[in-house]
Length: 605
Image (cartoon, rainbow, N blue to C red; front, side, top):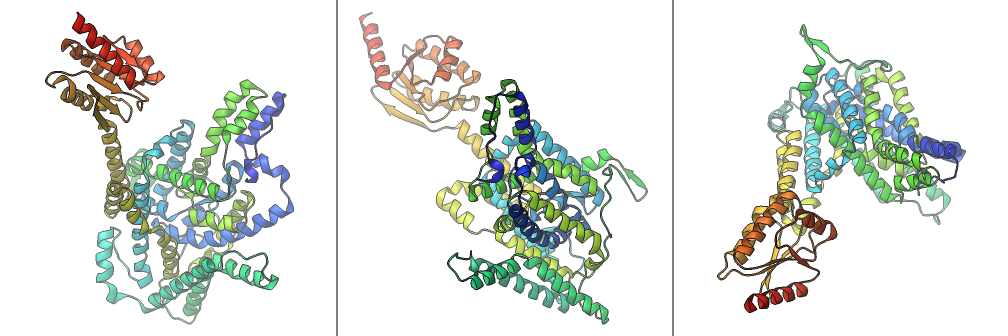
């Protein structure tokens, strides 16, 4: 179990309970008093390793977002400091990611002011979702939609960097036009960029394969071998930084001797970003663009980006919590506190649930004060963090310091970073996201689930945000169809027996009535009906009203409708409705016996 997930111990003193609430609201108080040199050493190693991965990725992802490279670094350090205080997972790292950068590029149009305002609003919306407990909305984004989007995003991002590998200019942003003009302008490719880009790709792929093949060092292996394996693994882990540094050295040497062989990143702002209130308006071409104008232009991005940000973070937290055998159990902490002071428990329960989800929102809100664009959890850097042996979220502070040092002292050198090297970093980072096994698995398990996957995947090449929306809409229609058209098993035991396999909600009324009329009321002669409700766990007033009319129709035709195996919650609703001629039994056999008795009674009458 993670050191952050140990349950709080209750006591009888209200003071101890409030101490527990503080530790729940600020998880740093759980592990900081027990912090030791061993943890510090491991956190320093992990933080440094992630930092050397984060810096080149941040520079590259800023290009994907259509922003100057320094904005990637502005976005890469705040998450480490915020999550160290409020985070409940030792592994997760917050910062710019490929998918969020791609989504942002669709809305901000390369304008830093739009990016900062989007970050602020994204943080406010995410925090609001936590306070209002709206995380359930993410449950409506199905696995096929997520995989369809990530696969399409990887292709879009990866192909979007081909132009930098080839050294091409003036390539449109639209994917279709991008493909056309990239192939059309291949004769204009710069030899220096092509050679450097391919070399960077080759080195990155080779180091990745070496890291994968090494695995973990075995305890019984000789010490020298274990040390060598650890060294190679470490070098392979920081391969992005090594490649970018080597490519920058080559480009700088070429520039010094007067050779302009490579397309360079170019001039960027020097030093640390100012900590100031985010700009809520700007002047463009002599026209004042107000905050409301910016918000209107951001449009659907204010829904898509916060949701996708939270979705990424939750997916990563679940994946690494499962992998490292820990889980955030707020209920256990609440129980321990509640035993000592019940009045406090009602307050702490709400606080616990809110704090567990609030970190991404706070990171984005605070990030807007340092000119960041929206961030979320990074799967790749979280994996590096976990594999490096991080012990607490303090590793994120070390990563943040590395990024700040880069901003303070290395910005002049970033001028000489070749675009081809950053493109190689991005291509290698997103390539694992293209998983060809997913459509095969969907086809094998449930072919219909291929529909939202394909809709999301294909529409994303038009506009990524429309791909997500399209996939969600298709999934919603599929879900609604299942609700409105539940499977009904029809059998005959002298009377008609209908077995429902889901709840009775208003969309199902017409469908249910049609089946009942077909098999019972419109039969010649009309037949009695047993309605098996063993799988029905909910019912609403629309259905109750329809059942009242059906019962009247059965009575008019001299037949009977009997309800069987009603759950207590459903039976309670039906009894309150005071339905005419309402009969129910606990089993089908009892229902058949009841119908026989009623039939005999009618014959005697």
